[in-house]
Length: 388
Image 1: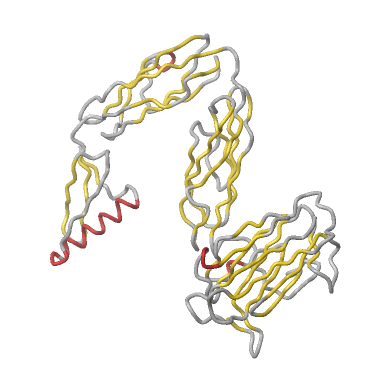
Image 2 (image 1 turned 90 degrees about the vertical axis):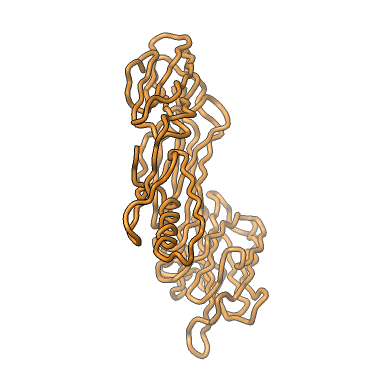
């Protein structure tokens, strides 16, 4: 069985591109290793520079198993899925319970009575049948406990300008095993029977998943994936680069260095997010956020605090049409606290609101303009928190 490999993963495409280079220019010949457990061998067809690397499958599937819950509640379907380590299966034949005769990769197993039920599946490809995979599901008429301790992780939480692909994985540490996952964010398919979902984004996105089983819904879990520059909310699309956002915990002191996030150059924003917890009373001690030089030449900077990311508009102490506070200088500082906004006072924040502290390399004199002129003008930042 032969199939072109070009439509497969980006990693495969990268390797194919390298192979073309070696064929077209023999003086640079080298060794390229391409690993794909679904392929037994590879052939190269066509004429350089337009060639296709083909995956040759010459053996039946192997290493086949069934994934899915080992327990279930009667009259509540669960999903059993056949997977094989090698061999690119393209046909399946199930036996056992209501899965008898099913010919798809997954079966919605169900039982109307309590007790164990054995399920089997034989995956095949064009070469022949693979090993028989087996599992047993113990059915009960007592609903399991709802999932608890659920969390959601992402393959990356920071993407470059333009965004990219992200893989989300849900997990629960307590209660009964989830059998369904309801996703929210960027048009993810919902619900699904698996705990993994994939998508691509161009803007900062918060994803949420709610695992559940016959016992009820587990706790919702969320993760935010940030996209630098374009696509973020506020005014970040006006800048060539936005360093990965840093979350600042209300009431906690912190120190950060731009070099750990990337190059802090001209037309770049170094950004922090501060969430004021709901119910926070007015501050008795004002907080202070500072940006300063760190291992570099003296560089004028601008620091703002606003309800919008990357907001360097003219100050509006109410926050409606601009930052609540602005500071300029090689050491810039904005003061803040939960209070009623006042034109000459510190930034007056509101409980339950999210704020963004944004810094850029910028000078006011003699002409307002970018002030770095290098690959990076490293800076440091401190937060002395407000109380309470």
